[in-house]
Image (tube, rainbow, N blue to C red; front, side):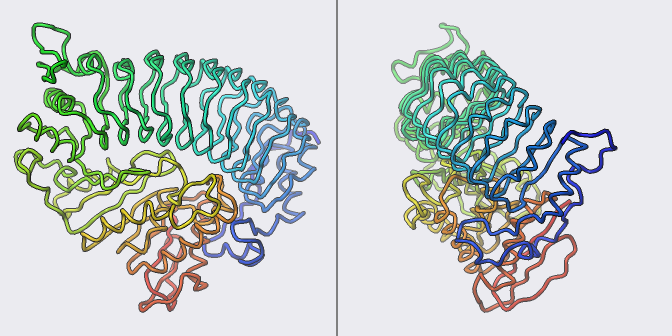
Length: 607
């Protein structure tokens, strides 16, 4: 079937606009499939024919979220198809017939059940974007590098343990996302990706990084956090002169290359949660101090360098919390920050107390962000008190050198990180804290760098047992016990976390959460029992919440269906009885519908 010259209507055909709570109308009943598996009502032949007809004239076919188990064979008759989306279905195998679509430039396969890819996929010489995140891929085609035009490759949330050597032949690649897999090593050929700008490897099992990574001269972002067995980084990373943002947090690092801290364009470097006792002396000199031997002392005897000017680099954010830094390094960092007000250095109270006890009273400048690390990990539990959040001058608040604790607020706001595995919401919360009418609140930043939806180890655990979830629930419970009010905040994976621990909150605010991973295109690679366990715990936790649960989504139908799933649970009583009235509603201006359950659950669509 060839594309004609008819005028191009909306490429998606008639849109199935539904209010989120009506999602269950598209399902074959809640129990139509095994827990954690897709139970959608498939697209009808009439609907499919309509979409195929539109695609024949536009070259774009969207079959996302259509309850497909297989790719309809008619798709392969549109031989000049340019864009194809099959995301969010239950497809277990991509046919070799994909080779009959040589004009494809974009192929969206996220959120299916694929375990392997056909060799025929590598014949698509015009393919520029390939989205495969949220599947169950264990291997990739050996000749993957034949996709010479590929610019974006998303493989996050799969079960990959190795990459083919040919990946280094993807010379046009600009973005490679491998987050949340089970990789233990990378092929040395990865250095051939000379045009790569973003490389995400967070939440794997890497034991080493190849030296050839230093050949990625165009790389701007490098995300390595959540690889606790990594241990060290190669000196060759100092050749990444275009790098602007990097994270090697929670990687078990005992040292970092001095050349990494001295990169000329690096603005943000996260090294929290490692085993660093010191930073390279030459790096500290280049980052914080003038290269003038007459105006500085050396660090060899633990002394502090003088006249810091933060020259020779653009580094503006350096996060070092949770490292056993020695007193000399800490004193030098504090002195450097005091003379360079445009840099923020993250240190925890334990580190500051160690510095004070070892080298005496050290004034703490306002641009040293003070926090408390509440748990050693996995994950980040970083508590920032109201004084630091609101920017109260150091002279007006207690300091570690005075031996006085920071005063606690009555409200704790827990900000969960999303799938990229970095702390979220800091900027927005600082703006809120600056408003004079806002009562004091502390913020607990929580991050799951393993990209496991705050639900425990993905590979080898099977069902996400109680031990996995307790790694987060325990520290949260301990922190929450000190406050009268607890607010949980998060988006995407972080939004799921806010619902997952709602039983500990007086209020929950979740943006675009994934509540049913079997039907989400954004998800980890956990098996069906693991997904079902997470879904059950979300239901139980929302039921246990004795406050208000607000869920916000935009206009993306995927997000509306996810929040509709939650609204359906509330209306059906899946979340359990309670002493007060629960309200379930969805959509802008929707009237609340009282039901005989506790908590108020509000699902809102924001244009």
